[in-house]
Length: 418
Image 1 (tube, rainbow, N blue to C red):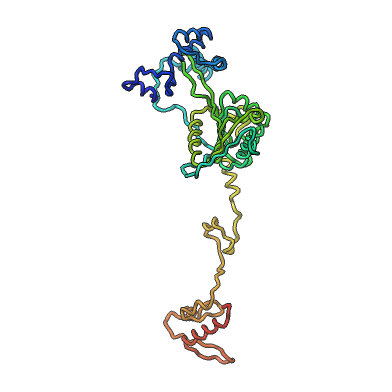
Image 2 (cartoon, rainbow, N blue to C red):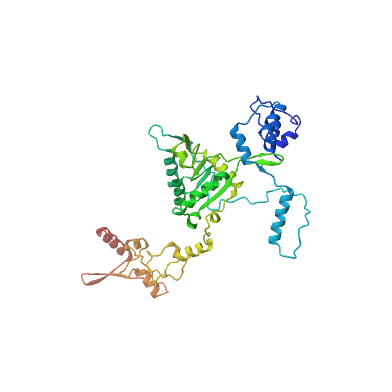
């Protein structure tokens, strides 16, 4: 049950009437009954009902016209049953069992529709976004500031992670072109939530841009209405009046500006660009609105076929990532990290030994890179006394190991690059 219904069931709240003079006054049963009279019997019955209930006339002429134009009556049981029978006759083959018309009471504990996912990407939250910073822009500009449309287009063109728009009307061709370029050329996810009444105008302007399937791959558009006002025989849908744009999850633009040519050229508007931790509020609000919105199939509206499945894209990326086979003998400087799993690669030994490091082991290096002591050990497995000789003045002189060590140390000190 709704929170307001639970409050009414508590002691002291049943039948509690809030006077109109109090700030918390919101709902009036007399006003609801008067609106029903207006929609059923016209403006005269509406005025009469207000006088009978001693209620002040609370609707302007513009609001009366708007209510009469947007009111939607509930479908009766006969209408719904006839539509259901027609759909069943079209879908069910002849001879199939027809619906008996007896249905059990349906009280779902959870919604029977899935929450639409943000399937083309959404920046992860939870991180501190810094101190909130605010910049205010107006039209006409003040203090040689930029136009509002320039601010909007610059944010779109500089985006790299995501663009999320909640707008009543979106018909500006330049802004639409920037959104298409961001989604197609830079692969930036673009989410658009539009008021239901502004959808036909949005689709009309998009048709003029000759949009194809490649532009719609990273765009998701959905429709939304207001919270509405329920009556006993119908409903007033309401409108979406939120106007803001999230960019990259760390910037938000909101205000009275609508994305249309007339708004940018003729109307007086003000927008606020904010960065920092306050953006989390708009991030959460957009995801909540997106969850209760209705899908708008742009591929169907523009009569274009959707792109190929993602499997083809994965196959292509895998094919591009295949490296040419390496030769049998490869330099150790040509082996990348991705090739280390190949055990058949033969890397030559390019390791060079410096003779001076063998002095610590008491061994004499030779020109072949193997010490004399190691070579003698390979010749015989039995321990033997190793003799060292040095050829000086065309004469071979026997030296003891400690004498060779001293001689080599002097040699290393004399040669600077040894």
